[in-house]
Length: 152
Image 1: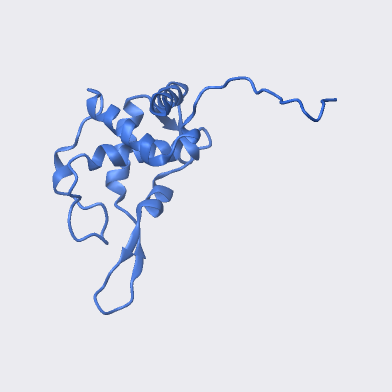
Image 2: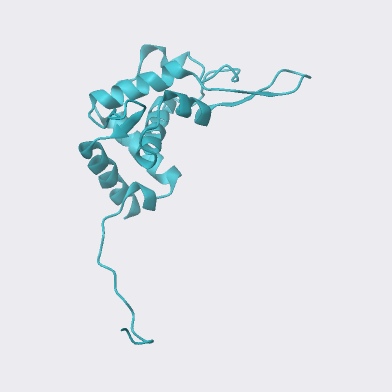
């Protein structure tokens, strides 16, 4: 048994994505994707809206990289996440003037193109259960490495 005054020391462990605030990690990973030559910006990225509930396309030039980093983080935290769940997550209120608002899902084409590129980079893979995507070992190590650099 331990004494009342003793302190139990934990073994040092690596920093994971769960340990870092979402904003800081997404900013760092989106910068990593932007600098990567494997991840390409689609030609339609400057004109497309992110959902039917939006009036205009995103004003930030790096919005596609930010969305990709956010999707990668979501799949890291919740394996088995698919396009439908991501559509619900990124969806929002469809404002219809004086009529009541309704919820609308986000654009699935953008999410699918992000998932396709992340699969080509070997960051994610289809889930063996047949539904959704999950992180690969290489992808998990990559995200944890970037999370460790953010924490420092």
